[in-house]
Amino acid sequence: MLFSIIVPVYNVELYLRDCLDSIFCQDFYSCEIICVNDGSTDNSRHILEEYKDRITIVDQSNLGLSAARNTGLKHSKGDYVWFVDSDDMIAKDSFVKLEKIIADTRAEIIFFSAENFIDTNIVKKWGEYNRKFTGIYKAIDYFELQCDSNNYFVSACMYIF
Image (cartoon, rainbow, N blue to C red):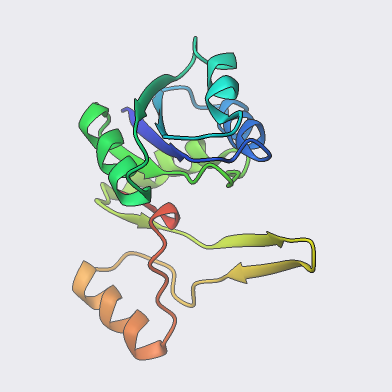
């Protein structure tokens, strides 16, 4: 099984190493990492070069987050796709847990909770995106539960497709 990890990159030199290192510290290695440099003007492209033996780097002019994700999809070969934002970090053992879920359920989409950290000159704040429902659902049933509970998270980086 192969995961395609797509990392859109735009001016994230402060976070990019942490993001990539969190991917490389996993115990599961059947994945490709595609980093789409979306016209960065900071040191992000230089940082990507430090990882060039382990990632695929795709450069494009600045077209925005969605376009960068779509470019990554065009280059992906995986059975499953995970969009990891370049200022995100993934939890240890994520791939091992995901592989087990996929083997046990043959799920087409996997969703999960996340924690976020906002770092500005004014405030540093932790938050959580906790899902109220866990288990196995048909897509339409899950969608209705989330909408009815007003607890629907649409962030692409909280799903495996």
